Length: 185
Ligand SMILES: [Zn+2]
Ligand SMILES: [Zn+2]
Image 1 (tube, helix red, strand yellow):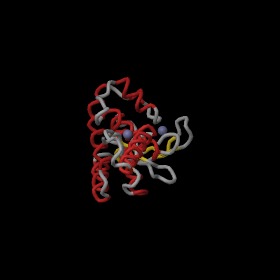
Image 2: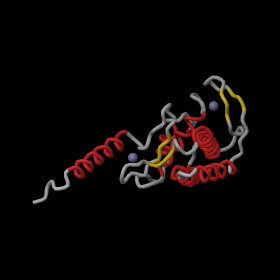
Image 3: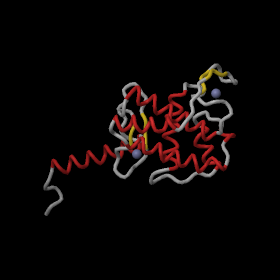
Image 4: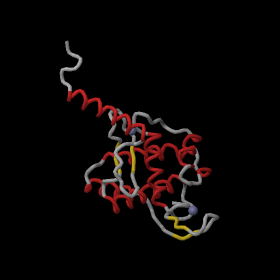
């Protein structure tokens, strides 16, 4: 939201929070790891303090619930529920990054800014693409979330590693199906 336009950053941060802190691979953040996760999306992580960790973790759970949804109506309802919990007050600012739009009222705590930016990011994602560009990795045994804002937007896996693993597994399954007697005495 800061430098590159709020959309990709809010969505990117939502995915990063979900994957770092929730799901099978996730673990509750400490202050330093939480800052590392969010710094990559141009948030002013120096404002993040110890008290914010619990509410951020709770919010990450709400965000994961969004990525699991495959039904548009349900997604709209969930995102509207997130938006109802934030106070958005857009204004133009320039604090060294060039003129850009902030959505949070000035001076609100960091956790509130994160809620606003992730909720607005997901709201724009759904407005533009419905539920077709977000989800949970299709690879067996992986529950990492993804969002795809690329031109074609056909992503189904959280990473190239998962996509490759799934392709290899599918290839093996096809070979087994094509040669049903292979390996039998
Ligand atoms: Zn800014
Ligand atoms: Zn995956």
